Image 1 (tube, rainbow, N blue to C red):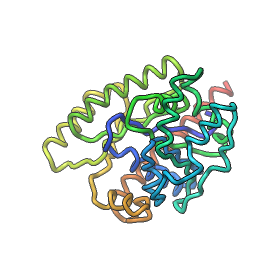
Image 2: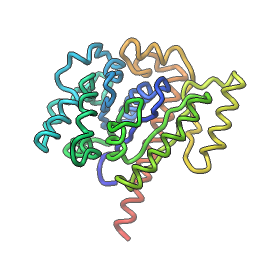
Image 3: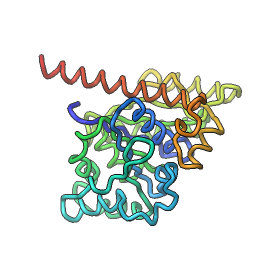
Length: 275
């Protein structure tokens, strides 16, 4: 893996903590002195909102503008559209125009690789590029999977969320087979965990039993905490909002594991080259 690692944060079910995880993982990696770019890839623009940009629909420089340039002219100016946030990482926001781009993708050649082409010019400038996917398995998410090295799947410890996880894993495997042989599941991340409930404990057990044999399930869970929700509401990461909380600690642990995984992958890549 000679360039920055691209990680898609994805689940077709909404409300499982994709944006919260995208923002706080980006912030956590930045605190580990990593250069990080967060791409908001959801027309709702929630990553931008969670960082204090309250009106993404009024923003001129977004991922939809950049992708439109690539579709029309096979080149784009991405570097001048990047926002340097107060959290220490970079951001490319999204807004509702991204839905139009998804419709446009259905009617062009190489529809799965537009985002990959967009990121080529900046990938080697970052240690990590995090993509906050929209809650669907449509063409935008397929674009994210086609350019990603791995996928983190946030899932709540509840039955419907766990059932949807299987559909998502099947989509990841199809993309791996058809477009992106390097794509892997970084891990299934249990979010909004509440070990005090019997249902939460039971679903947690089922997730490990059903998926743990084939995919990594992060031992570290993100707890259900008011402070995590409040941090997004005021436009800050959990580290800026409440750095001493167990929510901040959980995202610190996640960032550390993701960072260590990337270092091991780089070492394996170098070892392969030198053999």
